[in-house]
Image 1 (spheres, rainbow, N blue to C red):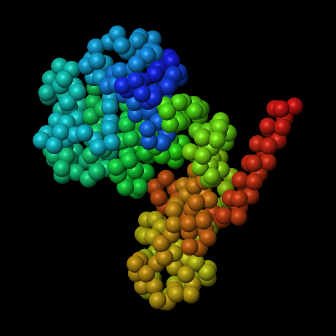
Image 2: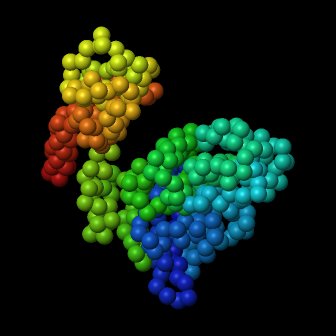
Length: 372
């Protein structure tokens, strides 16, 4: 789909910002460029749509050299999402989304109808279409930026650190939203980030860039975490890469145990008996709201008195999520929920560790058998 062939970019004859980059970006997948500041990842992204021109080498899009295409037409054929959303403050949300279709000659009514459809696609309420960017939260603005990039239904979507300016909770939501969109739309996405966690969560393939514009490693996320190609990649990935690698080990075999629960409306009910050291507080629909320790059971009269419960584990998610849920819980029990957020039980850290060790031994035997 997108091919870099010995691409170099230098400014004013200095050291290369991108140095002899050769790589193939697969159609319909998310490829993430990751690395420290000044490593050439954003420059590489912007050379795809000719916002930056290479000093030497070629970039091919479906076999055609992008240098042979008109820059303006090339850019309108691709979606582009930037860090600050780049929305026009004097135009409504709908008119911002409709920008590229209008530039491509689509009638205003048709472009606005498409914009309304995309509000739902990116998870925004229809009434937000009449607002201006300044009336939206940062996360909402980024969703509008994604909708605008999708408005002309481009096959390629370029995303330059689009989620770095929002808080961690919103960032996680936007990452999940992008994964959902990609399942539905199957775009060819090139995504730039400096966050290795974001890279391994989103990327089908990850390109790690080193300072000086050198491509240090290009592989799937699991391989980069398991087998960094050199000291630079190992250092960039971090000492806790083993924990991150658990994201690629499925948690289907984690045992889910029953847990005693109590509804928020029955906290003061004297007829309710408690037998466990920890009781899980849930609402009327069975969603968790915190823990009630046995020692302070009688003094807990409202949801505000409960102990916050840590992260949640969704049945069948990765071992990393299961372990994090149990380790972050004050009870040592990881709350497990279904797809609707209702409690189905708890997982125990010791049992998750046993599965991690079993997986490690299985991989060791597999590697030995392959070697011999």
